[in-house]
Length: 410
Image 1 (cartoon, rainbow, N blue to C red):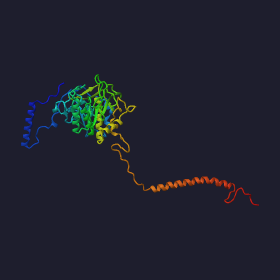
Image 2 (cartoon, rainbow, N blue to C red):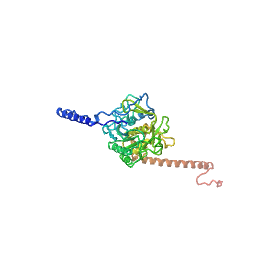
Image 3 (cartoon, one colour):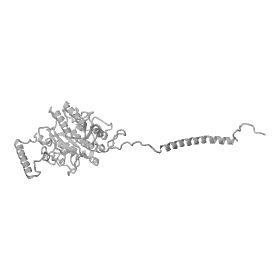
């Protein structure tokens, strides 16, 4: 697979000469003229060109309706790290959304923005594609930003023994750059360095979302990592009818599900789109990462565990509540953001606090009223008892001090 070529020595020398000349002119003229900063440098263009066009909103967006949550949260202020095959910064849906990242595949000059495989760009578009780009498509959290980190030179089963260590290093780097959510639409084998990196990220209160994995001739139904690690939100795939995607790996570690079949999204090169009919849990994880960004923006003080619990408790649960195929069910963006969860002892974020007990100035009057009512009731009962007795005595000509059985005088 062709990679974006690094700058040659001659090219670097010429660029350095131009930078020195520009700096000298700036000093002499007293202007702000200078060499362009890395942030202003042109983004690389590499990867496949999209051949699909969008004529209607993808089914996944119609099903999830993330726009229903936007009045409450659009993901503003949240950075989502996409550890993948790189993310293009030139597609109209992603212009202005992609930060300078890092490439762990010996292409540091591209800052994670070279996507030869065309996978990471589609993932990023699902998470934070811009709204109003002239097409019926947007990301789940259009105000969030993407931090691109390239660790995958290609798709498919990667046999590189260094991959777990590279993913671990990518997680650590994302945390150091202030990522709030990390999307891991990939699977590998569990290695000690990867385990430690996941634990460090969770300890730093970073939300980790990962693909549960896809069945293949080699993987069968083995758990996918990092998804199977405790604390990581593991995502399975659902089809248009709400059923489990057959290739989505099942297991007790699966926490939640999202659209994972018949996916479409932005391509790295040009303005077109790529369709992925077979889908996969990679794309399902991206939808959940977008919802996690909405939740993190609305409730920035929630821990990763609390974010996961919110997603699970507001999902469209299966009849049994949880199963090994889709976890707690299809993620629900609106309910995840809008629902008030918790108890009075442990109130939800933003809920009204429990009222403070106060002294009641009318409490003595209420006590008197209660006693008066009780005594009145007792007297009423006594009167009801005595009245028929007195009436009976009168009928028998009974008077006080007189025995009714004594003979009459005379």
